[in-house]
Length: 409
Ligand SMILES: Cc1cc2nc3c(=O)[nH]c(=O)nc-3n(C[C@H](O)[C@H](O)[C@H](O)COP(=O)(O)OP(=O)(O)OC[C@H]3O[C@@H](n4cnc5c(N)ncnc54)[C@H](O)[C@@H]3O)c2cc1C
View 1 (cartoon, rainbow, N blue to C red):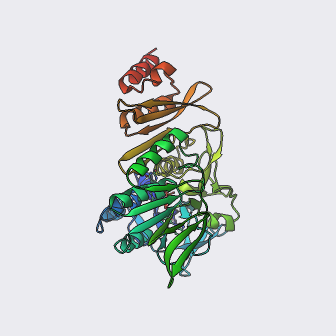
View 2: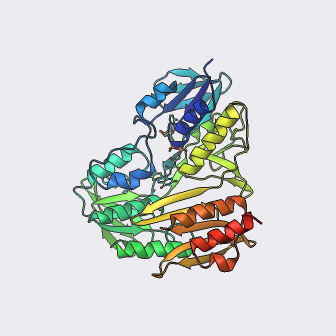
View 3: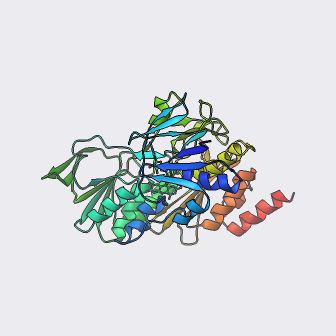
């Protein structure tokens, strides 16, 4: 029996292989990845990996783990076609592989910028270890960096590069940073922090072109200004890698569409992680999330299904981002038109932003306040909302007391 084949050895794929073994799955497990590196943590690529020229990749599991758990690891191999009728995969080297159950854990690719000059040398994106190595290798000759896009990856890299003494500008099309991922008060706090670190922000600004000389970037042309650039980092979002599913006739809409058990529209084919549009119980609609939590929790949930104890996927989303010295953590999902409550620490800095919908706590953003983040995760998951007057204090001990009082009621 060919067993379970997982396409993609990122956060979701590797966790699934591990969880299958932990839950007693006895069939064969094969992990295939187009990426040639031993599976690694992606978040450090825009953080600690940029700090020093020789910071190593952080492996998700040691090499021995795969052997010890009888997981076949097929690195540097790309699957180009799924033949559903024959339950067979075709790889780019022409080889074929059979499967009993197939899991698509293919993640996302960096969205490309479509302005003239986007293909010049010195213009980078950041999604894989190979991208990160290329960017890092280009840093020694650079003094002025332009980051295009004010999302998490761009801002993490901007803070890191500014700390390395580079002159960094961030250009963002929207009037504020971080799109709708966080409240405007959190976005403003992060903007002020970055400016304090010497990063120059150009909001509400479109890129007209990237100019170069001898094939290498020299400038980024904005509508009203030209920014000199030795290096450009494009961080304008990611797109789901859903072509295999689409070509195989699976339902795809903003990612591979799955049900609450992470099953696709085709029998014996499942999908997890960044590439998936799943029914989000907390929002009551299908959504796609890009986070380590979502990929690994979906993997754990699918392992239960594949070993005969299916549970609908219902984990509370949470996320973190390290933007220089600011640790931003988000629990839950904010709702359109909800209410926000911001708290501040003694020095006047924003510490947390609570999101309420219909009086119910649904999400919380914290800045360097890990205890409050953990507490808010518990409260949201358990549907507990302390009184507004208590939340407004931002005093973790007081909020904890109120939470305990409701729980023990
Ligand atoms: C620079 C960076 C920083 C990040 N920081 C954070 C953070 O701070 N916090 C957070 O929660 N999340 C962060 N993320 C997001 C997080 O890494 C992703 O949400 C997570 O990796 C998703 O896991 P996944 O398994 O769905 O996909 P991935 O980990 O992307 O893995 C997908 C794998 O599929 C393989 N693949 C795709 N197509 C094929 C094919 N046809 N054949 C064979 N193999 C294929 C790819 O090579 C890849 O190995 C960051 C991401 C990046 C890039």
